[in-house]
Image (cartoon, helix red, strand yellow):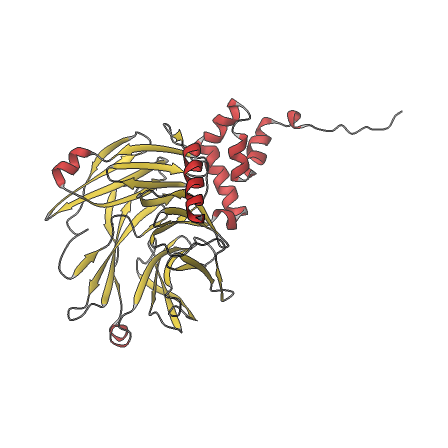
Length: 387
């Protein structure tokens, strides 16, 4: 008698705000997806944009190895790459991967598009505006991005036919298309310039970027690189400062390759000449200050020749970057100067595109469950591969 007895506090007695703000926001993505079925209130909470943003922010900072990933399209499959392994997530079925932003992956097949979140097994499908295809010809450029000013996921498309050009933007919030102006100085076509594939080369700070190579007049070697950016907040195409290889590089190191990647959440260009002792020069564009390209550092020597490795993409944080050869991925850590092959990586598959990726709870109104179909197709593809 007289002794103080400590009462145990059960989960039911914890303040709801504490559970929501301090516990549920810290759940790993897989646990959060499972817990959505606990109650209608939790289902609503896990779909709330503010909660999704907090959950992503916390997990990205506390679990960088699980949340700082890449997604790649390889021949007939889409895979997610961490610093340690490759994970098969979906047969591509002739889809073009347009981009990846905050957990959403945009896929395109002909006129059909989809915004797909593999973490929650949900997808929303929509189509390109057919009247523009008929009026302006074939699609020339397409890109995915996120507008932070109004929390809107957008897809921008551009049609170029001769001297005419036309653009429009899809809004995930309104599920509709609107026109956008395309300046004459972007996506130009001349004999001395060569634009790349439909989708963006990279996505930096949630805005798509496309590249154009300009060539020396007397040979096929690259003289400079021009980058076009679509600013999601203002719905504007912008021509960024041209990156020029200096004269000494053009004469001494002809045949130099380059890769435009995302590193430390910045637009980064890596220039190199494939050899057994390749030195990779890393440049970054300061888009918020001086607006000039600056050389950050050099990495190497690296053997990029023996196994025909091409630089593919960089992780958003940490400085590591990924190289590939015929579908095999290796990760290079410039700080530790180590090279390691990603576990589970599959060979003999050409690489289509590769973007940064972070698993998230992002949900858009109108999304439908694709988990059952996806799992069935994955199982079938796995059995086929084993045979």
